Length: 418
Image (cartoon, rainbow, N blue to C red; front, side, top):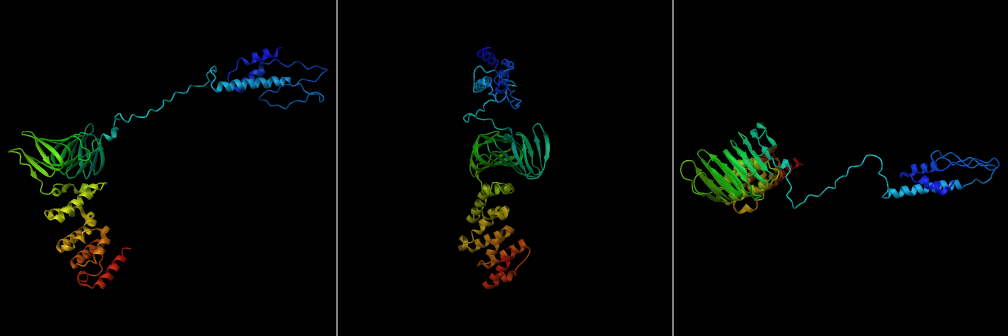
């Protein structure tokens, strides 16, 4: 028996698994020599997985241990080879089992390269303010109730007795349709069949055209109102500038605050100034009030308030302020002191405030019950009685009562709202 040769032969068919290789090495080693009747019995090498206790040898005589050394060396060598393979040995065989798919490394998008817009952002966002009808490409005619919808570009809208607000994400184009209006809306082209519409691309300038049977209206950055009247098309430019291209005749240019009318019979009217822009857009008040973003609402309140104070269009401005309702109360309340030098205008302003106030304005109305003007106090008393359904005192007391009596009444009324 040659120990070197036997170890070499035993170590050749290693597979890379430490336990399996150790078992194979031990199995390849030659069997132990038979025990001598005159000497101690050689120990039986225990199998690796059985872990049986060692049997005693002879009568206290020392056990031969060289076979243990052989087994330990073989096991250590097998473990070393397996570890080398596990750490990247080139000669290691392919592990058994199904091969794993290579997962491609995600590539970050190139921000310099235009990315396609998601499909849902190519649609039109519609807010119906009542029942209306739409004819949507590929889906046909549908009757819609009040509420938000998403529809395809090229949809025909017929508002009937309702209003419609349309927003196009692609270019921030906003379109509003009045009652009894029909229009086909696409991202860069609106076809007005009948009725009245407002559109604005002022927030994100882009080439927009509105097509009618009278001609086209084109603008890169403007806010415009168009009305298809009987036998004519009326165009008003509120912001920016636009071009009006009649079906026959030369192109017209309108600046902010100008209007023109294209007639079926007869010449185009001369470009004129818009008398009062608030009246031109009063039909949109409900849509402005219901917007989640109050930027346009705050701008409109300030615009109508300033026109009311200026006096040139006071009656028309007051009408628009009344349309806006109780949201104007803070702006009107802030005019109490500045208008002190003009008692008549101040009294008219306070009366407007009292007429449109609601329950959210009670605190300001109670403050004005202590105003120095008797007519203002009576106006506030009437408003509080209308809003709350109860009264403290009467008109005579609020007009002629002493400051002490009125003060006690105000404290009493305030206590009811704590």
